[in-house]
Image (cartoon, rainbow, N blue to C red; front, side):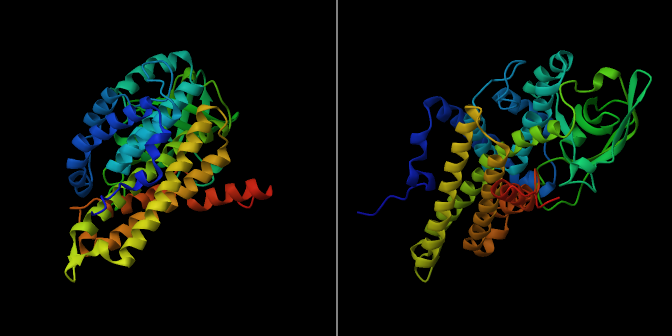
Amino acid sequence: MPVVPQSPLDLISFDHLLSEEERAIRDVVRTFVETEIKPLVADWFEDGRIPARELARELGTLGVLGMHLEGYGCQGTSAVAYGLGCVELEAGDSGIRSLVSVQGSLAMYAIHAFGSEEHKQEWLPRMATGEAIGCFGLTEADFGSNPGGMRTSARRHGDDWVIDGSKMWITNGNVADVAVVWAQTDDGIRGFVVPTDAPGFSAREIHKKLSLRASVTSELVFDGLRLPGDAVLPGVRGLRGPLSCLNEARFGIVFGTMGAARDCLETAIDYAISREQFDRPIAGFQLTQRKLADMALELGKGMLLALHLGRLKDEHLLRPEQVSVGKLNNAREALAIARECRGILGGNGITLEYPVIRHMNNLESVYTYEGTNEMHTLVVGEALTGIAAYR
């Protein structure tokens, strides 16, 4: 009898490691992505635009915006459940997972962890429903891997703050209702809750991208932006604030990248079984099977690593260098899987009829943002040697 093909994660019985609740949450997000994202996302990618506000409200109704946060209309799920949601969202598109990640793990998390009670009450319930969209202003054009060198400044003027400067590569920037902006002050780096309709705030959308095209990417400009004194986040000073937010977002990437990799591999397997050359499916050739087997191994290992880190996070034991291990490995392996799958599809691999080239292009960005591959390599190197090679 012929062997029935298995899905890649069935090889390691991955679902056996999840609770019934975790599987249920994952399946709800998977169904949403299959019905509401996948049929449309290739067109969004080709057009370089998405219905961000409509999507935000739908994702809010789904319950994934800030889903791992407690209170203020958030679901309060486990870290693992949030990670599994990221897997499914990125199986749709990295841009959709980025929207959710920036909203929940950067903007909402910063307000939740470091904001005043007034900040939380004003913004978090509306952000959880998708009524309000947030962005996170840290990276600058000349300061990516070295955020401590940022030039954006905030100075006191009477009871107010005045901010001047700019931020670059900001997801959600042009559609955001609120921005969490980090700036140099006389008291070190501080974060500010900035309504985007404040005078002196502007956002310029970045076009001509060949990656993350189903995502809004912007430059933020602050020209004498005046804010009340209570706009500052009271709960943190220094780089610890933005870096802790980045670790939250990187955790989602550890899971999310595996969703893109899984979608590529499942597409390649289906294609190889149905595509015939020399009167037989290309899946029957040894070279193709070796490629598929190697990719299934890396996908399985990446998912097991992500799950392990999620269990540590739920026990409040996860360390920053462990997040770097996950981001370094899984972003790298996901990109390698996407490239290999593109080759299996041959000429069809470069068309948006299949999702592989879209995932591959997106993963080039994911490989770089939230800490480049090189920076995470050096974080791991410092953990192993005690020597900071990036300074």
